[in-house]
Amino acid sequence: MHIADGVLPTAVAAGSYIVTLAGLGLSLRTLDQRELPKIAVVSSSFFVASLIHLPLGPTSVHLLLPGLVGALLGPTAFLSIVVGLFLQSLLFQFGGLTALGANSLMMGLPALVCGFLYRRLRGTSKKSNALVGSLVSGLGVLLAALILAFFLATGGESFMGVAKIALVAHIPVMVVEALVGGFVISFLYQVKPELLGVTLARENV
Amino acid sequence: MNFDQAHVIVLNGVQTMSLFSCLFLPFFCALVAWLLKAEESTSAGQKTEPDWSSPVLDRHGQGSSLFHTWAPSIKIATLLIAAFVIVSLHTLAWALTALFCCALCVELTGMSWTRPLRRLAALGGFLGMLVVIVPLTSPVQSGETVLVLPGLPEWPYSLAGAHLALTIVCKAMAVALLMEPMLATSSLPQTLQGFTDLGLPASLNQMILLCHRYIFVFQEEMRRMQRSMRVRGFVPRTNIATLRTMGSGFGMLFIRSFERTERVYEAMLSRGYQGSFPAEVRQKITNMDLVKGVLFIMIAAILLAGDRLLPLILF
Image (cartoon, rainbow over all chains, first blue to last red; front, side, top):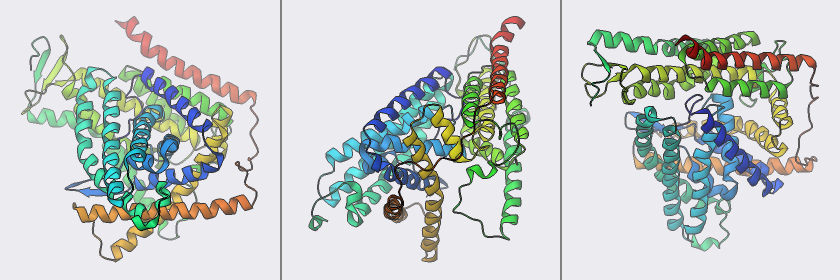
């Protein structure tokens, strides 16, 4: 769920913008220019994937994917997510322009955490990769939901109800995303492990 | 729940229905209008194959309105400040005024209302949730008016909460309407150049351009994959098999898009790409651009001043 314009107090919206810009500056400074197109591509393919709705009982959910972006891109995931969210706001009004900073932190920070955890814990077998991929995918949604609830709660007591409901509404998304994330990682591990930064011998697959 | 201090009004079913229909009327209007427009465009689109490969944002980049002739950097800076002013408003009346001003801006661009309305429709879910939940869960203050709805005695409907939620709805819709005049009245490279002139790193500019270009390519790729899955009898359901299939589908999308880009990137390098695209002719900043900037900042300042000072004068 993206935060729309006008929900957050202006100080919070502006403050999160400043933090996001600082984060962008940092990741751009450490970035290899040749990686730019790769990040752009990963951003756009995740953008497209997050537009697909999966059926869930009578309703449907779409994926948030911070965990997978983190797993694929590692430290540059933040950059990718800001670009993706900027374009989502620009093209479809998913997330307000003034809330872009908050939305970027909401998705970007979990992506960084998940990327770090995935790289640390994934192990060397397909099973462990899929399992850790699944865990970080679920964790990504959980962290994003917690940050969302935190941002909503900065609006004062009137928003506490919304924050709680938003948190609860993310539980099914978390479950779906954990499962899909595991399947995506296991598929990538079998078909193109280089994408995950895996350079081990193929006989382990 | 204890709300002794509040002014309580108990509603019956009919009153509740009419209250909620009033609250949701603007949304339904926007939605219906959008659906009608969408209907029109699909019936028109059937005659010719749509060109899916070309980006849609700057289709209206050509024009002669005051937004089209405005230098992108000044335009973006001004309207971004205006957007932040709008989201800072606290009172419904001034948020409505802002909404009206932004609608006027869209009208001034002379563009069709399809995309602005589609933006409003995209907001529907989030704002609809706010309108329903915030009034029911706002803490009740003393002296405030609450409505007790039939069947929900524990969840008083706070009018202050409703005011807050509707103010947010107006603000969000106002900024959403401002997006098209701000970002779609120049070609996308020019708009991004405007951001770069304001201090955004040039490499980010390149990334956004590439990403924007690829979104439409990959969207078509995804559609093709979904079509071929359907042809092979895949019906999405709520089960593990669906998730596994979709997971592999997403994985395939990433791999295909990645390999495609590697080829394209090599082709770009071999044609002399060195990290930046040839720039279009940059619009020079004229006095007229600055005058427009000052004008819009003044309008925003009036909105903010009215929002903050008028209640003080009146009460």
